[in-house]
Length: 329
Image 1 (cartoon, rainbow, N blue to C red):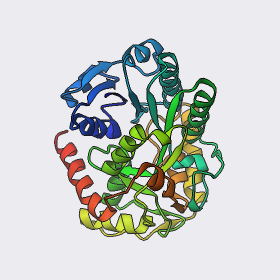
Image 2 (cartoon, one colour):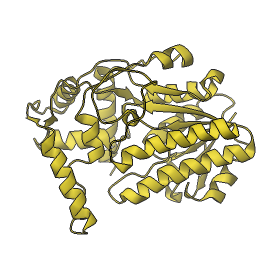
Image 3 (cartoon, rainbow, N blue to C red):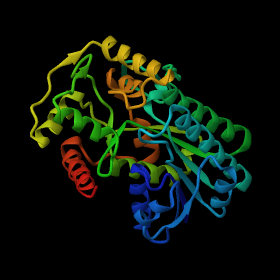
């Protein structure tokens, strides 16, 4: 089995590569954007290039059985336009590569945000798309629509996974941002600390990706992937604060306050009057400002997916890994 992992040096991609390399008979081809990232992926066949380069992607996909598309723009140096382009063009190149090859499956990662910025109760995959107005969120809808078009019109074998908030060692975005806010005493809940937050530990996410790749019935299907719990953001943050030795936050902000702040920073950035990172992005706001109870019955029934790690077990492991990363620079 030959597997291709895009974004292989990133948070999800690096964990997936390590898991694949541990399986007998698995050959892993890892796509990274920068050559220096190759040192992080011992044992994989590393290729450096941009997923927006169709020729590079086409060449890398030769002889591949499954493509795990994890590539995404990350970090403060990535502009919204670049992030959008990497997401959409990269996915198109992967799907086009499979169409031309006439073989192989793509496992794509989108997100629960395709269901919109709204409260959800026992949400299944049958809910319609709802746009948020945030390009970084809405591009995930475009990715899914493109995937279904390639599957229906061109016979491309594709499966879509919609994860909740993924956390674990080597996370450089979600959990570290929460940790910084807790340490400086600046964390505040949006609307309510009782909002249910769909989460999934990285090893469970990797499990779901592997199952999606090898389950024939997963072709043309989308799956919600969480830990199956109804964990509130208050429970999650209280646990994290306790591990950090920080006082648990209690402040709750009306949704309109951070929302107006997001719009202000977006306007300043558009006018080239602000070049840093906003305190909170509209994507994060749309995620944390609503309560989402997610139904993962389809993934359990069709993929055999069964989450194994609760936040009480996963957070200590994640924190240990993040602190190790910080110590190493």
